[in-house]
Image (cartoon, rainbow, N blue to C red; front, side):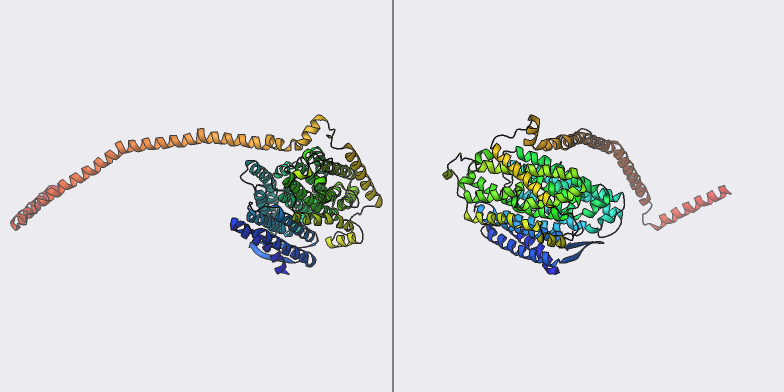
Length: 615
């Protein structure tokens, strides 16, 4: 059992490291090797999800390295590995021989392996290790085309924003250590006393909001869209951005014990689902629309964590992973084929590539929450928990669901509109890229029964969440009717601009000005402080050091000229006197006996005179 879990994480991490280090000589073999490793990892993940293995190894005194697969992490390891396989199959057909494929596939495997460590970690130190590697590899993947400054700047923005929020995990770990000794297990954090419990809760909330691009950290996901589409399909559908939501679902008892953490998570998730839904409606760039919708859809998962609807959150996570990875890969295929991702320029793309257009329609309708697709049922399961907690939360969730239908159908309205380009204008989409898209589209349909009995009851039992509220028939009917009505209105509105008020429209197109606000509130003050510190260093500290050095040199010259001269003179005087005394002392030493006798007589005479005089 332990070998199973060790192999599950070691296989992608080891193969990814080898490919990344091998470099261009391994480009030809990299895609096939990566896909093979990914398929084997998926098989291991399914086995681990069924057997629930656990491992432990010494790390630090009292802080072991622990991994385990239980109900929630079992769903995550299968979801992550399945989406990774689909994305790598697509990339195998999409990435040309001129690309650095060994580096790309190696980093993708490294990222997937670090995500597996993150979701199977049972202690804070282990979680931090996976969390850090995941952040580093995401930066490298977003900036994969590093020769283009705009892309590296986007990777830096995403990395620095999430790293700032990641400090929350260190705050949480510090609070847990300060509260008392122990292995810092995630399941045991809820038992801490105040004030450490509140510090711990705040740290985990901040880290989760940052990693999952929740308000006010959402803007980094917009910049991350400069990375390759397969990267977006993995990182921003089933992996990196859901890590924060997963952490909150895992930390449900902690949020409840704090007395305020659960409400904070629920309302931040609900607010993000609505606000970023409006942002998605206002976008005219396909990947930007998908990025904003990702923030909004993960807002539902964070809402589920806040209201304790773990089953609904898990369903939302898996259903969203299938739909969003499908749509990101479709965006990548159209970008490669037509060289654009702007919606007005993609008019007729679904007509030009009908198979891809149909598959895109399945993903978009699932994202819209239309029955009988999976996200429709998943949202109702988690909204049932919101309704039990607060009618206002439920109403906010329904409003966000309506917005989901609007921006999803807006996407479809453009790509199914009358073509403005000849079908022959575009490049063909490789057949190898269509197969993983088909599998993901089928998943959008196949996951729906998991929200209904008897599969729903089996899933709740697997997760250990029996007794959570289940949606009634009218709830399914209401959400489905609202989604259908919003979809019909959005389709009828066509490709005209959304009639939003001026400031709201401008703000929504610019992601609510979140990045500008971050620059005004954080980046600019930090840079001003840094410049002031640099000026103080240059003008005060450096000058003080230079003045001290000049004074020391002057003192040294004065010492050399006066003090050292006097000392040297005194030493030379002593030496001269010693030489003279020596010369005088040598004169009586003639070697003649009668002279020595005369000297002795003279000496004794002097002594005798002294003695007589003294007496």
